[in-house]
Length: 409
Image 1: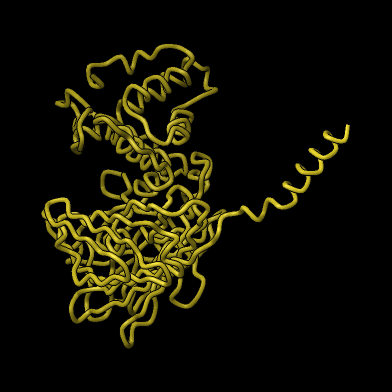
Image 2 (image 1 turned 30 degrees about the horizontal axis):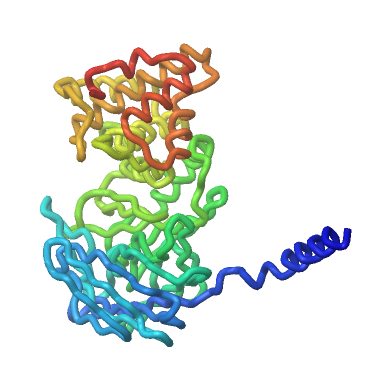
């Protein structure tokens, strides 16, 4: 009897004292100093307690964008096409400092990221390259990002929560190594803000770049109820940045942020919207693998059309004409599989998804739709063509005639 009582007491004491075993928090501070005169940023990573981390193994790409490494502890650089840098921090407070070139141009023309004397449009993914983190057990890194702006530059915008004038909290639950990803913009900026549902939306661009900030907010406000109805996850913050030529004339989603060239129409002559497409990419977060790029690209283009149509922004006549154009653009496509999909393959994928939606609605008597397949794909996190077929057939409750096609072989 006494033994049982003692065991219960020990268990009770262990339960009461469990916070002792909670993860020990160690600060990881990112300090970024923008240097427009040399088209660079000086980045400093500081660990409040270096012994918390055994090593950070950085993937530096071809290595050409990074230079001037200085480290407390050991730093080992392996050059090559896939350059790597391994930092083993000193035990106490430890820093790694380096420089990164900001302006990158695309092979197809225009700048991907750019720094001028009065502003910089960049990606956090480039500031701090991806890395494998090997840390001590029971440690939780608490990451913050702070910018030091050139004299006269007014402000900086990122998609991360602001915790000070030019300071942000970096917390990515899906990654062990919290690094500041997504689009960022600093300098002489104009911005417009609003709250849509649970999301704080900011549209920002350098002054004088012709960004139609209110038009962007108006279109977002218009489609947002449909976005909320389709996608179960909504970011707490969304940043849309834009600039004009010589920036790349395109659009691209990154972590809770979208880049949109300010010369792009918000809705094109064909009736689709680059902004709504990137929004669908961002909210869907579908990772496809094994030559199944058609899934995420097809979904994004499908919902770029569908969200505007459901919001009442597209007549049936215009929808029919758009379907005709998609069918024509994709008529010579024989397969949707590939590491990268062409515009014709994307058109063909949209037509396939539209047919699949009709098949699902017909076979389930309108109880289910392609929206259910999308949500299932979001829950899976990553999927290939075989997974997509199985998921669709589980939604239908039967085999799919539409997906029994050479296009997916």
